[in-house]
Length: 226
Image (cartoon, rainbow, N blue to C red; front, top):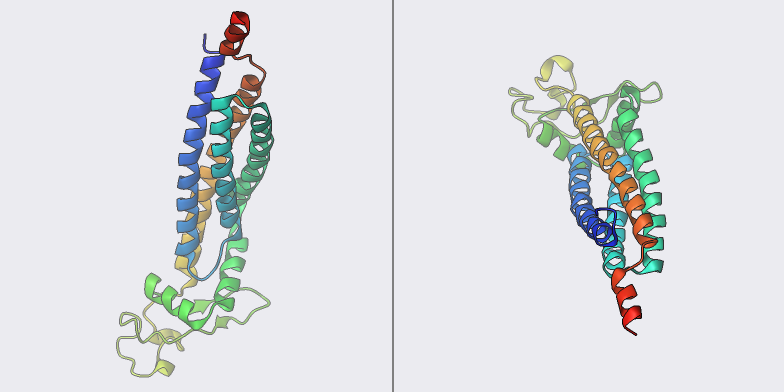
């Protein structure tokens, strides 16, 4: 019978092994999304990373608690897992619900606060030059480092004053386009993965609750033998 003690124990063990794998996947995907944006740190994505770290920790607690049928550890596991579910579900929904205006604001602020070395990395990585900003409380054109290191942008320029300062002199797109595209993909990917796996945590909570109240048949046998 699958609802028995052994089945519940094995299910909980297998589920926590899955959680460990999922935690590493979420950390890798979220960290990749954060790094790919280059100029800005995505706080919502960082929230998914934090949830994954806590999930990794609580999965180890769940493995020990399930293998030993430890009542206190299982109770602690249930409470923390449910809290992780609430946080992860909320952050994942926020990642999926972010709109274009919010993305543009985050990207513009990230570019404005970044140093020239980070902006140069972004220009070289995305093969772009400068940043067109459309926020009302910021200047229309945000300062940027030299684009002369990108030959496709200013093929005939010998001075930075000739490169990307005048629109007709620059053959590259503005960096706001690829940065916002990468941010959008990052939010969608991380949000989708986080939302999908958050529901498995509800299953883990229910299995742990049932397993915690089940009697270990081996303990009953030992008491009878005495």
